[in-house]
Length: 389
Image (cartoon, rainbow, N blue to C red; front, top):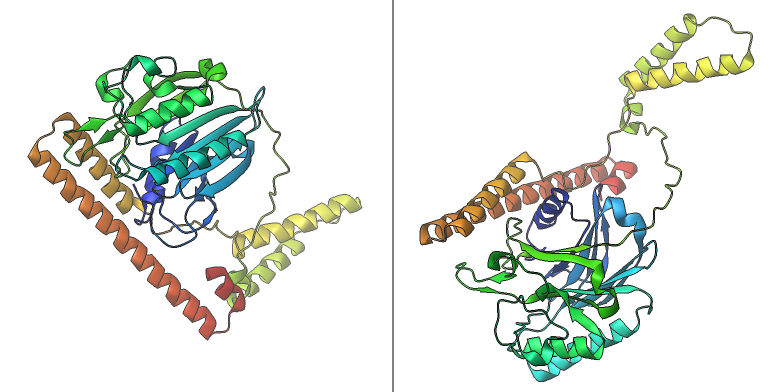
């Protein structure tokens, strides 16, 4: 999966919002730099390369409901990042990783695990620590690793990356929880080939051995789709997050100032106030008198100037995009249920059409925004110019 494709962030968010998932660890974001993107229903924290390499990149997508529990987000590099959540009894630190693949050099793998070791050591010792996602490791059923791995794995023999993961777990007193739970094979595999014929279990979840009872279940969800060859690995953790009181909410109305600049609407606004004052009865109480005047002004403004609508980001993501993504997901489920060549070709075609629709919608939206900025600059409308930028 890559976030470089138009609409991919919205598609991923919709997949998360339609489930009970609270936070998702992402890989292959492929952006530049690090930071946070806030939306109405979720936030995205990302850690990518400082150069525009369009490779790797990790991050977390967090539902708005638990965003208040985020204590810190640390961008280590394009392959490792952490997020810390405020728990009621213990804080939770999630380490999102993207390990080198099996064919990479020994030096590259050693460098990755050195960075991971330093990151793990910097976590406060009383935190519940989980290492998540793409370790590119096949873990087998060798007796040498039975203390840190479970018997519910789809592989018989560990590859080199699997041995590195097991050795890391032994050295840091951790347990590989993704092989501890008994499920059907279709709920164990985490990666599939483009032809859907080969399935591997290479994404894993590690946790401190002393806290392993915190994890209640781990399984893959094949139904959720974001055009990735990896399936989503669902981890259920029994841990209470602290409930923080909500701060003061700003309920002030924001008026449409563009209408104020319209002489006709401004004249209607003044006329409304004048008519309401003619109907007003004299009040003895000065407080009641002021309340009436305030209501007259607000009612007149609501009828003529009107309240400004909220800015909706990604206006190009409309019902047509959602329908195209829905058709793609339905075709993919059909392909998973019956893996024929015809279904695979149909899925490729529908996916191509969905990507094309999203790309065209975004391009059209960007062109319209450019025209709005140029128009505001032409008429020297400074407020609208900087707002559109």
